[in-house]
Amino acid sequence: MAINYSEKIPNNVDLSGNKSLQRALEHWQPGFLNWWSEMGPDESSNIDVYLRTAISVEPKGWAHFDYVKMQDYRWGIFLAPANPERKINFGEHAGEPAWQEVPGEYRSTLRRIIVTQGDTEPASVEQQRHLGLTCPSLYDLRNLFQVNVEEGRHLWAMVYLLHAHFGRDGREEGEALLARRSGDADNPRILTAFNEKTPDWLSFFMFTFITDRDGKYQLAALAESGFDPLARTCRFMLTEEAHHMFVGESGIARIIARTCDAMKEHKTEDAAKLRALGVIDLPTLQKYLNFHYSVTADLFGSEISSNAASFYANGLKGRFEETKLADDHKLHGSEYPYMEVVGGQIVTKHAPALTALNERLRDDWVADVQSGISRWNKIPEKAGIAFRFTLPHKGFHRRIGLFTEHHISPDGNILSEAEWTRSHASWLPTEEDRAYVCSLMGRVAEHGKFANWIAPPARGINNQPADFEYVRFN
Ligand SMILES: [Fe+2]
Ligand SMILES: [Fe+2]
Image 1: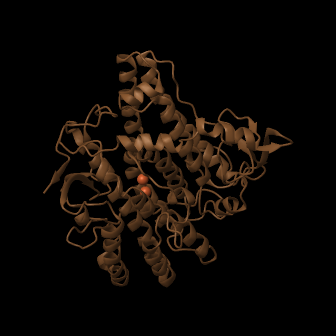
Image 2: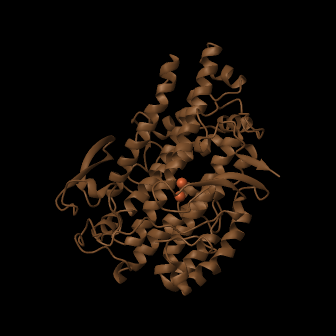
């Protein structure tokens, strides 16, 4: 499908051939731009940022780099190329042709799935809106803004689906997506993790490493959907999501590298001494990891879920890499393990695999997070430092699911209220930790310079050097 660059909204969905859809989206666009100027990155309207823009869905052509002002970013609508032969690959409709229109009986469920995914996109932009004022370098500032404009595009992608397939209800949902606000007492974003603050760059890197990775798994499950427009939309979004996770993983790796350097140079593991040197001690990084990991684990939902079962049975949301799995793709008679506290002990039980699909997707995500942690651990290992990062137990600090009523330590022990109260400050960031991290955040915007608490990247973006002028102030 050709892309018409002369249109207001770049797209590969033949907007010009669908006048009522084009009118609906053009009507929504000013509201989006208002939202961007009100809730998008602070003080960003007058700068030129070296950004990639999706201008094609071809594997090598979708990332076009140039300087743009963010409010002029070409937020477009791109779906991965259609496969006219595509079938529904799982659930009770397996083998039928994929739906090109919303099946009436699943209309409200599909709308809810799309709205819930769509809501996270502007939410993260809102959470991150002040971070530009404390960037550790121009390279990092550019990466933050890249993530922000692409989350904006992901909102466009979901609103396109709502407008194209859900009529008036869809248009109302599109408006509501611009009206909710992260952290707002009266009209908050839908999911709890997207109402938390992202107050500093350590939180931002943890968020993009861990919470954008939840996004990857949700999108991957929706990319299997029997509703083909949703599947194709999510497939293309995944290509952008990879960069967000790279920003997080490499950001934390650079912080670890800088801290390990300081530890070696000053021959100390003492947190107070390291803080005096202006770097972030490794145990504090571990606490931030524990926090973001546990909050994000909740996003997958309850271990046992009848909603998850019906999403799957109805062909709406599949498993991660559904078509690569070798089973009946209906999950009749199969089971999946999950953990629960029974009689003061954590025990592994088995549930029908259909009802345990949230847990299964969470496990896929856990394994992926763990591989990132293992890559981080090579940094202290190479430096001859004994510290290793570990993931806390899945029951640690959970607010959703079977562990909600229990206090579980990172190593998986059940704690009394008193033990939890005594110990949680050594597992989760305290006010003091957060204040220290915030105290490091000062704007470094001279090109080629990096804040003291983070190492420069090994290489820049799009084969540019690390000291490239990624952002130009006018
Ligand atoms: Fe996104
Ligand atoms: Fe993302």
